[in-house]
Image 1 (spheres, rainbow, N blue to C red):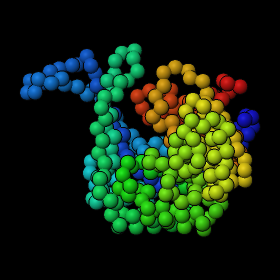
Image 2 (cartoon, rainbow, N blue to C red; image 1 turned 30 degrees about the vertical axis):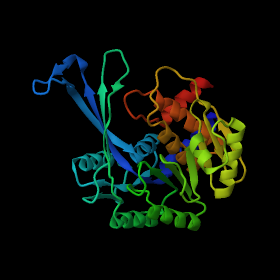
Image 3 (cartoon, rainbow, N blue to C red; image 1 turned 135 degrees about the vertical axis):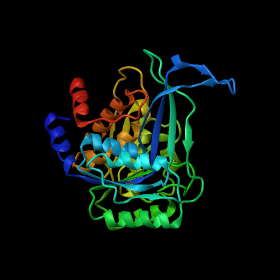
Image 4 (cartoon, one colour; image 1 turned 180 degrees about the vertical axis):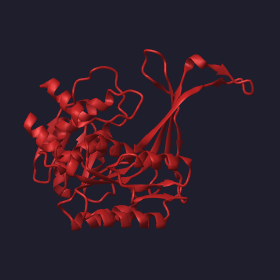
Length: 341
């Protein structure tokens, strides 16, 4: 990617309006100082003394954070949080950036706030060590009134946005934002606006999703196609191309150290390898950085190969940020690409 094309694409980011429909959660880090180790007098169990607490949006919020780092113009979170302390904390964190509009982010007492609580042991001169995570989730189906509000938001924003990103982060069907009813509304939108970039990702795989743009890994691709689990790169490219042709939408397949494959409905297929490692890594958030960069780049007019190249650079930057769910800015991506030229 030439310097001129890099600037031509990324300078358009500030003009974009992007909606992120998905499961927004609060990620709370508890930083533990092992030097302050104690034994509880009451239980005789070790005590982890927390010396700092920090929190940030996670799940769909990680995609939002990456879009913010890229300088996207206006961002519309579409989702919900609970009417609880974690929901207040998440809402405040989401509302801080001026580019984020919370008009369609619902706070409701019918749901609790999806929360990942991550205790981190901080040893001097060592990477943070994560202890067992403490999660808060919803286990019951999302109420119809909440679904109605989400569907109304999608329909309201459809004429305004340049791209719509879906992130299904929950482990149990229909307990989060991207329920079957919400997916049906997205299907209607995709049929009405075939020109709109819609990019979906789900931790449970994309089986049952409407034919929109898909972002997945090779194992998830194999669930939707005849791809064998031990497929080589050529087989993955063929399967991605066939799925893109079937959906008439782009397909992206992340391949860890092998990089990423992309396929467009017109038959264009590309592959960009992962960048070399530069030290210890933490892969949390890499996939969301890929999603955000693909959405921004393609909505701004990048070619398939350019989008893949930008996504791989962003993922490389994120995995080298330890003890946090990182992001990659345009300036950081430019610097990294320049160093490899």
